[in-house]
Picture 1: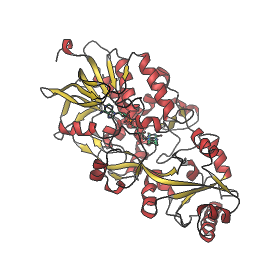
Picture 2: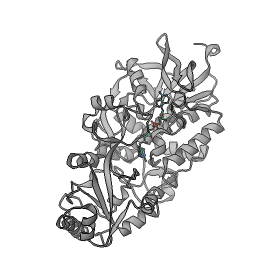
Picture 3: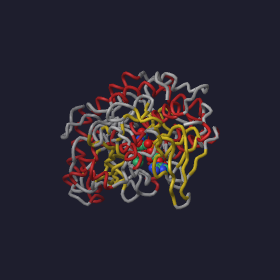
Picture 4: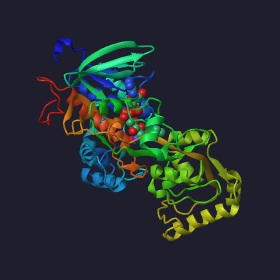
Length: 470
Ligand SMILES: Cc1cc2nc3c(=O)[nH]c(=O)nc-3n(C[C@H](O)[C@H](O)[C@H](O)COP(=O)(O)OP(=O)(O)OC[C@H]3O[C@@H](n4cnc5c(N)ncnc54)[C@H](O)[C@@H]3O)c2cc1C
């Protein structure tokens, strides 16, 4: 394909965290980039996330006295996930992670700070870097501003309907939408950043039957077509049975009940007042435990934990303000709020207090209660388990090039984030470590953009290690 009949250098499909990062990485080398978003605003799942990106060995960690590196991060993620089909990406993204976060903060003014008040699921040290208000919306705002500074056109309301392929090479996209009309856009390379299939019931039924009945809590745009186009071109699929669940979304408020409430010493009760298991498997793994028992549950903690979280997390503070966090002066009053037997609630609280005070395991085998025994007054949030996003997708190499089943790459095609095979195990929700979603979106986004933009005579610092060229 010659430069003359190319409309832009790089087309990026989907303006979430992965797509915006790919666009920034491509545009900073001087490439022309079109970023096409099917919905009316950029954001996707990244917008509704907490915007937390894990990175091992950043200067921000060192300044906070946290010792960490890529090797430790790799070991942590693999411990949580167990063996799986995308381990090459775990190692690679852990190695990339510190440079990635520093590049976003220092080169592109994305406001990310190391979170020191919790580690979250899967991490043995504090390594999540998030916007100060811990909202994905802020991450999207900063990434969009960085992209615009580099003259990236973020074209909303323009759904990509398929890929153009010439002589086996992806040469652009076909757009077809009510507002946009139909047109073709030609490019040297296409980056698929349209996320997974959380909002496609047919694909969920096929790949994640255990989550078929779960309420989907992610963005509308995750309908799986990016994965289908890549598989039509022969792409290999990885870890298709894996997903991120979340055990406790506040009902009916619809906001995330911060897992810090559990990590600091709280627990979940079924509607009959009984514990459902050891919550330290994490918010994703515990979602299926809740779903096995009931349609909803109650997160129980105390006012010390409530005030600690509300002081750090605005979304949780809002939940408190709008009355989503109920307060009870005693176990009996708590049982009345839940609508269950006081005996069961008292037993659960007494067991937590005994285990936390003595440093021994509670009845579920759990030992970790950093804020000690729960104290009156108690708090409770009514909640439901949810599916946040899917973790299965296409295989890519360390340049985010899509790999076919025969091990060759699809020329001109890259994929990032939820389109790719995730870092969270082969199947189920237990393998998910906090931040796995954005690590693969933003981490692969950076290498995809840089590699897709590569042309003779144009610097592409992040892709220069590619021995074969684009
Ligand atoms: C409530 C919640 C909290 C979460 N918290 C975290 C967290 O703190 N840390 C973390 O790592 N992960 C978190 N996750 C997961 C994380 O949000 C996702 O893994 C991540 O945002 C995926 O990024 P992405 O760029 O691949 O997709 P997205 O951010 O979803 O972006 C994809 C975009 O592509 C668009 N698109 C799709 N198809 C097309 C098409 N055909 N044409 C044009 N546009 C298209 C979509 O509309 C969307 O805007 C959370 C998820 C949820 C739901």
